[in-house]
Image 1 (cartoon, rainbow, N blue to C red):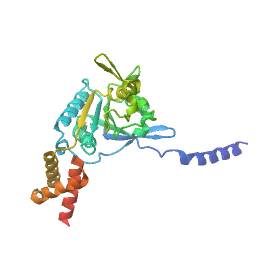
Image 2 (image 1 turned 90 degrees about the vertical axis):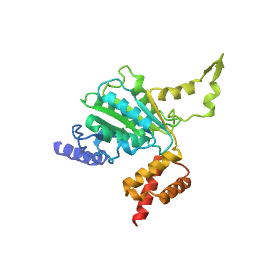
Image 3 (image 1 turned 120 degrees about the vertical axis):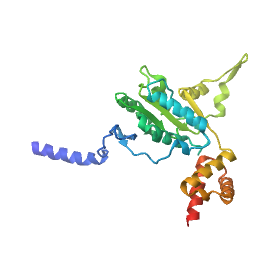
Image 4 (image 1 turned 180 degrees about the vertical axis):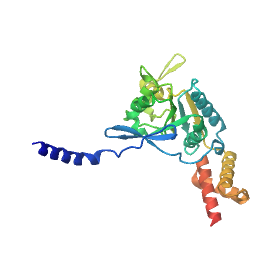
Length: 285
């Protein structure tokens, strides 16, 4: 009887084992400065990752005000002072995600630790935050390209962690998010049907209030806009010289940079980086 039961248990384990996640390497926050939160069928886990690159804050041009505000907010947090959750929103390719990466590279030595969460895994955000609550380090939980569709309820977990529970977020955790949408949720014409004018005051309907209430939970809003031509050319000059040599930036490079932006249909830090990669690569050929 015991042998038959053992055989059945072994057979069951063989069928279940492929569904289990591989054994996770533990995160050592004294050594690791960044990790990914991965959701699986049985919950979630932290997976350490090395910094993606050596991008520095000084490499990001055209967003000086945004850099200063986010660095000051993060430094206040690292030193135990009051600080705000931050929403970086605006034009694509304007440096939102790059700023967070550069922030980690610049402030890791001051104690900053970063945990990235995919927006599809936000349902596990309360469990993650509770796990970080008892750590001695200070964490920025980061969600890139955050947005929700009208039928998506994952934003409720984010609202709860930001400011909607009795306990609130722990004092050693801040949430930073980037998005192309100011209010994170899609805004339709029908949402304004219930808006009414009372005297001189505009009163939004419930649908609008619900959408605004999410972004309102971020105390620091940083707007990113398309680059002016001068800011774009300055970024092109910086990356061309950074990837190549000083004399790689000349009048021909300037003219090609303008042509490249016209073909791409916009000017941004990302377009400047892509131009520099193409320009230096072709010249070296």
